[in-house]
Image 1 (cartoon, helix red, strand yellow):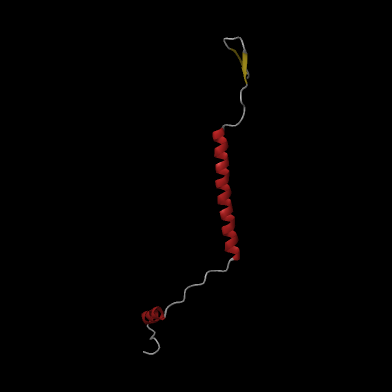
Image 2 (tube, one colour):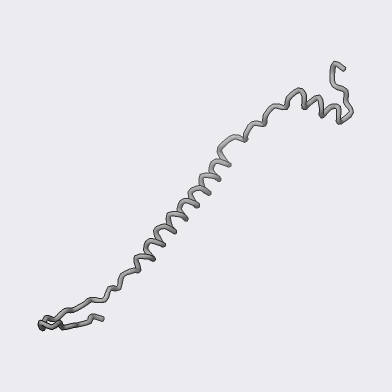
Amino acid sequence: MDEVFSDAAGNIITEKATNGLNPGLVVLLVIGGLVLLFLVGNFALYTYAQNTLPPKKKKPVSKKKMKRERLKQGVSAPGE
């Protein structure tokens, strides 16, 4: 689909039609690919960590809370 033009001086100008990708589409594909790669990488790291890391330790229950729970259940706390 080459177009041929002639200017006032008689020179022949030919314009070649570009058949490349739209630059906006290229940018969209690159950014979309990076976002997709980021999400897949995060998911892979999360599943790897779930399988390999030990479970988190629970905080120790304070003596005050233990005493309160025993009183709720009807068991007298030691020393009373």
